[in-house]
Structure formats: structure tokens, C-alpha cells
Amino acid sequence: MRYLLQRVAILLITGWAALTINFLIPRLMPGNPVETMIAKFQGRISTTAIHALELQFGLHSHQGWWLQYLDYWRNILTGHLGVSVTYYPQSVGSVLAQSVPWTVGLVGLSTVIAFLAGTLIGIRSAWRRGRLGADLSVPVALFLNSTPYFWFALILLYAFAFLLSWFPLSGGAASSGSPQGLAYLGSLAYHGTLPLLTLVITSLGGWLLTMRNNMLSTVSEDYVAFAQARGLPEGQVMYRYAARNAILPSFTAFAMAIGFVISGTLLTEIVFSYPGVGFILYQAVTSLDYPLMQAIFLFISLAVLAANFIADLVYILVDPRAREGR
Image 1 (cartoon, rainbow, N blue to C red):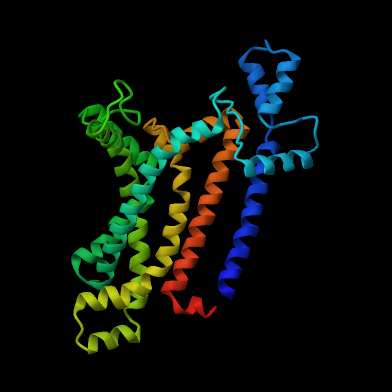
Image 2 (cartoon, rainbow, N blue to C red; image 1 turned 90 degrees about the vertical axis):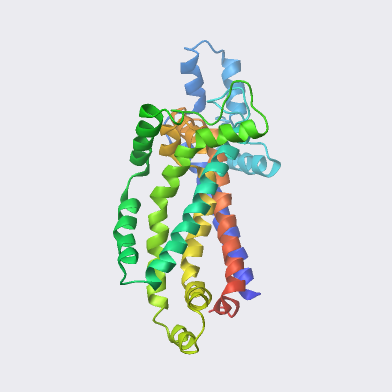
């Protein structure tokens, strides 16, 4: 119980700090959304309209930062995220509702696939160390882990979309005709295969190396040698004894990665013109879109905090040392 209360306290304090920083950072940047709108309309905006835009974008330049900070928290608690500058007059909520499913589907699926594949290969690579296939996986994983994912994305795009025309050059799904049912799922797979392969292949090496290193330190433990001396099956010793303890650090990293799923992958989404959160975040930054930036950072912060808190709860169930507060 004491461990759980400590984690809840840390969660609340970290959440408050993250959301406060989320309030401050856009306001410390030069310029503001209203100036961007004035430039967009080439000065054809009245004084009354400028004041209305400030209210819409939550700037309230006539107020001090403290009152703006209170308004910011009130808007968060009431779910009012404001109006987007980039997609004006759409609300921030509607913009996120359109982009978040794309990102969660792509990045979430690629993270799970890369974690599972990299972890399983890392387990077997460490267990069968000294053999050609197991040792060869290390330099391959190092190469994949050091490959810039946007560079790999450009290679896939050039080879399979431009030269072979197997996949589209850009987009998220077919927009014409609004396909339904299996046709829509086919369109999703058609547009999402190359981005998915990019993220899975370039991130798989990191999970493999992490799990292999954890396993190498675990297989030399006495309880693993004792399990082998008892004559237990190799698979049972490898997975239930060695891998079960070696996976704990990887599980923490996986929880972090799941938390960052909602942030998208900025460069990959830009390369493929994929309509995800990373792509609209880039547009929000270039347009000084305070409300949209704050909403995206808000969801990223909350997702990471929630994922870490869930990981802490799972640790209580998996690791007896956590239950004892050690």
C-alpha cells in the first residue's frame, strides 16, 4: 500500500509539472497565433476581430499570466481545448479526433510487433549464444538500431512506391469513394504497410539488444543453474526462469514506448504524408498554433504518465521486491 501511495503522489506531482510546462513553453516562443492570423489575412482584420481571436485562442493578452494559467486549468478540467489556428475554424478536439486513430493504429501496432519480435529473438539469441545465427543477430540489430528511420522510410518509399508502384506515395487511406468494410481495411493496409515496416524494422534492433543483454546477466544466476540441474525442459527454464526476470527492464521501456504512441513519429509521418499526430504537430509548430500544440503535448504527457503508472502496478504483481518496497 505504501508503494502504491508513493506512485500515486509521484504521478500527481509529475502531471502538474508537465501540464504547467505545457502552459509556459508556447508562451515563451516569439510571436503568437493572432499575429499569424493577421499575416494570413494580410492585415484585413478589425480590432474587434483581433480581440475575439485572442479570446478564442486563449491568449487574453490583457490578462496577467496567473489569470491565463487559471483559465488554462479550467479549460483542461472542462474539456475545452480551444480552436485550432492551422485548421481554423475547426476545434482542437475535432482535429485530434481525426488524427489520433491514425497514429494509435500505426505506431501502437508497430510498437507491439517490434517489442514482441525483438524480445523473443533477444531471448533465443542470448540462450543460444556462441552459435552462428545467435551471434549474427547482434551486428544486424546494431545496424537496424542505428539506422535513421526517416532515411529507411525514404528507401522503402523510393523502392516499393516509386519504382515498383506496389504501394502509394502518400496518404493514410483512400479518400475517394469512402470505402467501407473490407475495402476500407484493405485501403488501410495498402497505405499503412510501408510506414509500419519502417517503424518495426528500425526499432526491432533496440528491443533485441536490450533483451539479449538482460538475458545474458540472468542465465548465469544460480536459480537458472538449479532449474537446469533439476532436469526441467529447456523451454521452461529459458522462458519461465530466465526470461521472466530479464524482461522486467524491457517492460518498463515498453510502457514508456506505449505512452509515447500518441505523439506519433514526426519524420515518418512527414515522409509518407501520413495524417497522424506527428504530422499535425509539425503544422501546429510552424503555424504557432498554441491550442493545438498544448492539446497534443497534454495528451502525450497524460499518456506517458498513465503508461508508467500501469507499469508500476504490473511491477507489484510481477516482482515481489516491489510489493515489499525494495
